[in-house]
Image (cartoon, rainbow, N blue to C red; front, side, top):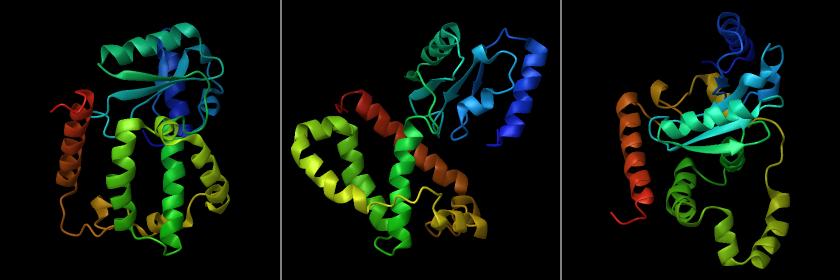
Length: 225
């Protein structure tokens, strides 16, 4: 469904009209505030978020997020459904815009767009660092465990120096917003951060999904393949 609050609310209202408060209504919104979406519902205690990650058929985790009035039984049912699907639930007991994964992801991306806009780095440089430095380390020790291992004293000193110089604009990146306004939408239009002219969008996505599947299987096997 489109990320349009009015459209989503109209669907929720129709579901409540037809089914009453019997089912749990779960939204997959990525960025719309969950509690705002719950406003006007007749049965807000049956409303929550179940946020899948793209590609949904590959990633093994799903966020389950409680809105202000979500009852425990609704959360329990959502967790059970996630587990029955062979996935791992990430349970957030309080809604925050963007939830967990998107907040982390957008924090990194906002700085990446700033580095691009300032001409400090190229898309290739940023992706190479993400794939070969950040990615492997996060796969092994995550974000916080790695800092425990390396030592928090050094990390705290580096934070005092680096954080004040980060991009704290508080607004969406003009660099990205202007790209979208021009119609540069990525693989399907032939141009985004990269030139995709002549590439088949479905095949590019298929290849990326297959690499993800192999990596996740490798990690879940403890790196023994």
